[in-house]
Length: 137
Image 1: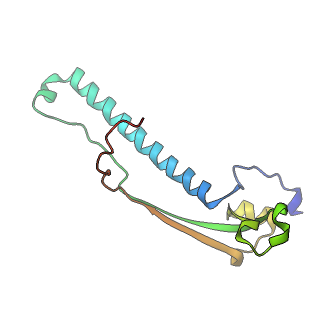
Image 2: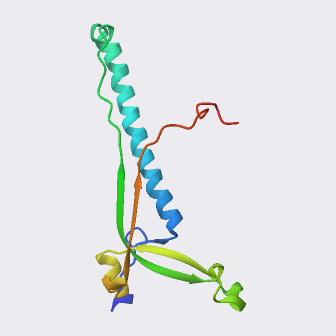
Image 3: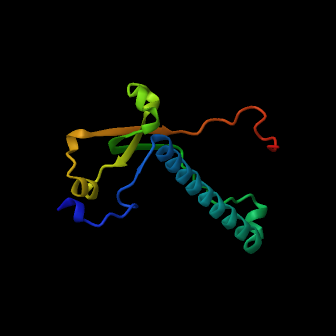
């Protein structure tokens, strides 16, 4: 039966939309930082190992993630707060939780795809706000 299947939280995770989007954004930022570190390392190696190329202005290639589009099939869950039992119609009485809809989720919970939803968002670079290069206090 479905409830006898092993459940790995990395295969079937449920979290709030804000946490899911935040985790994806952090992963993209981390990937960009790794690309930047790699380019800086390559530029330093170029300057140290090939000073002649550096003198004439040769630069290594920098890669960047210009845009990320995310589209996920999600199963929605509503977590009811017992402390709000007197006001069950209040939006504060429930948390919306999302679970990634995939084969493991479907098999574990006997979930039908018709009940899934799609979460879509884009991450795009914008210019830094004026004064943003000041050191935070």
